[in-house]
Amino acid sequence: MTTPHGRTAALLGLAVVVALTGWLALHHLVGSSAHATGADGPRVTTVTSGPFSIGLSLKASVTRQDPHDVSTGGRDIEWSVHDGEQVYRGQVLGRSRVSPAAQRLRARLEDARRDRATQRDLAVLELADADRDIRTVRRNLRHVDGPGRTNAEEAVDAARDARRKLVIRLNQDDAESTDAIGTLTRRLAQARQRHRVVAPRTGIFRMVGERPVVTADQYTMTAALAPEEAYRARLLESDSALSGQVRIPAGPTDFTCASVSIAHAGQNSDPARAVCVVPRQVRLVHDLQGTLEVTLWHSDSQLLLDAAAIEDYDPARQIGYVTLAGSSARQRITAGPSDGEQVVVLDGLREGDQVQS
Image 1 (cartoon, rainbow, N blue to C red):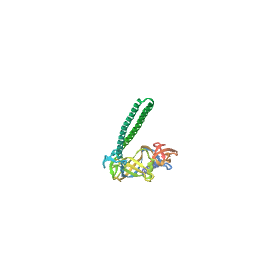
Image 2 (image 1 turned 90 degrees about the vertical axis):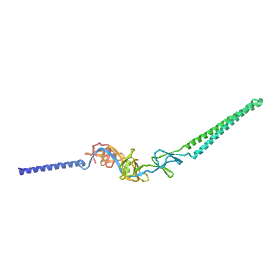
Image 3 (image 1 turned 180 degrees about the vertical axis):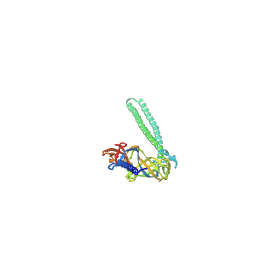
Image 4 (image 1 turned 135 degrees about the vertical axis):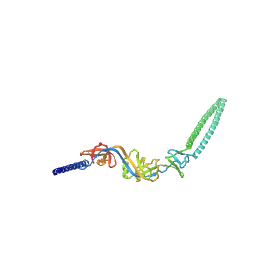
């Protein structure tokens, strides 16, 4: 049987155990809080490592691309494709017909060739007459003696000189005729060359009245960017291609845009726009509404720090300072991209380092 004194001792021992347990729990909580906030209140944050992405979530709409004009250069084209036919970028759609100018040039060329042939026939006759004159004066020279011989010799020299001059003139005339024929031949070849008309892109060939176009079977997701979103996109601009994820509640399943471009605002005050080229296998209709998630920057592994921990940050140099936990020492760091909550640490800290924020 337990005596009153024994029951009192047991209750006293139980009270001591409860009090001691409460004190230890309180001490643990206070100690943990002091570790997180510091004795004087500053919070301590740890440098971590992991994947990091910066993106934009934009409201976008589906737009069908405008038809592309087919350039004919004002020529009369003989088309080799039909209205409504599927065509592909670079495909020959038709060739220009032979122009009336080519027909006129061909007639002039034929006339020039006939004139040269006639000119050469006349030259043969003129040379024959010159040779006959030389033979005549040479015969006369054989029958002349005495004072009249000098005049006969001069007549032979004159006939020979006339023939030389005739040959020079005939050669010049023939060269000019040949040059003119060569020029007409080249001009005719250029005029007869049939101009090829090619498709500017893949799509459907259409004749809108007299205007040939290719209607692209292609859609885009287009979204306007708020000024702060455009600013972030410009800061993170690089040569790397952007990608995006599209979700259309009333459309197909989510799909990826492998090519997303950012068109920044110009002087006409139009907002910056993100344009996603929709894959051809995705079937859409004009003006559907959805969400475009654009990844501006991504890395599979980076050192990350709470952005609030950085002090005296210089954006131009990407240099800032942090205060190491447990001391007043300041550490200079080089910072990279930030989403406003976390920042990439490029230099100055290691994983596991603790700083005040």
